[in-house]
Length: 117
Image (cartoon, one colour):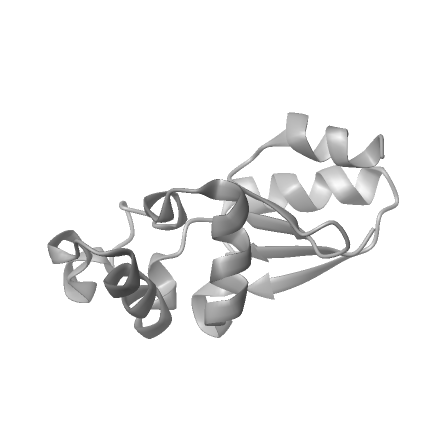
């Protein structure tokens, strides 16, 4: 497996995702989404699995007001907002790069299903 965890340093759900893969001795790459963000291609890859771009947004973020997110209506505008303000990404976003699968949030059931394959 080739796992990437896009998370935030002080996020309990990100720590939980790390713990899940660590306990199963699965190597993963942790990316600080708040500082590094995601490329447009990575966002599109996650959207192929998640379907609703609004799930990628942490509406409780302190940056949400400044980003203007609530005025966004189109998917493309929201993508541009995420690119400009990576602090508003929800976390964790977990990707299995080999199978092109992705989840948002603490989705342990889905991660377990990835292990069975």
